[in-house]
Length: 334
Image (cartoon, rainbow, N blue to C red; front, side, top):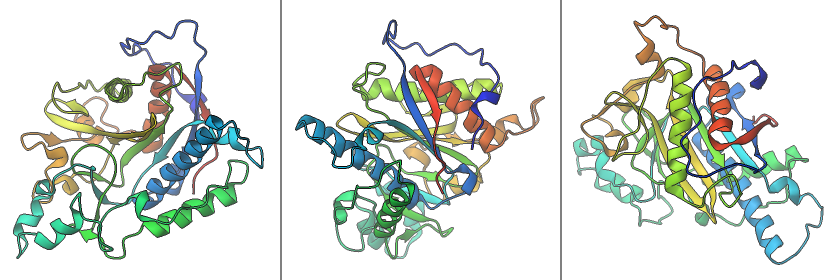
């Protein structure tokens, strides 16, 4: 597990939030990390989000009806979470993304028609290459944080249900899925830090504004990179964080009743060949490139690339500072 107390004090300033937090008690965000397990299937990380989201939505519905939980454990389900993953290679398309940025399809014999159909935002056939909770039978949400076995079983069941038997594959063998986040096509894989915050934006420390939320997530990345002496910036048009003209971190989010899912992917030391424009146009931006912490630091006085865990520790500290929340270490994910 990550050791938050070992992180050096960050001199970077807090984000320029328009939301005053004076006289407001900090929320707590509980960290569930799978980094010690190494790269895990994307379906597993997706299932963790869905299970925790479903549990919290159930809790909120019960609160609205002024009902109580039979086992009394629903307070465990009304928490803000930060999930930390390193994924096995995968490409994902946002809910409204075009298949045109899967550039390898242009070299298919049929122009990629069959694969485009299976990835289409409107296609709902059994062979659709997508992850969507609506496709599956209602899953059990009885597991609690006090019963990790039941919780893990629930995640395993949902991730197994979500596996498309024959997903569309990229030329390098990586599966491609359409999912419910915003944004165009992107890549996740080893050497990339993925953070999925599940926050209730109705809480006092936050704002019910996804544009505000996106800017805050970008600020977390900017402050994290600054800790490693990397100056980065936003783009006036495109989401994400950039070093010069190259993208170093992607941001794509979703929200249900103001509870967020998905989040950020920060390139620490991934194989950048997976972003090759003969395969995809990353994030649908043709005139820009992709970089990583490793690439930026190469040849500098800080040439040593930090480990994924080192970057994760700093990112969590920056998350707490930018969002004004207390970061609490939770049970690891396997």
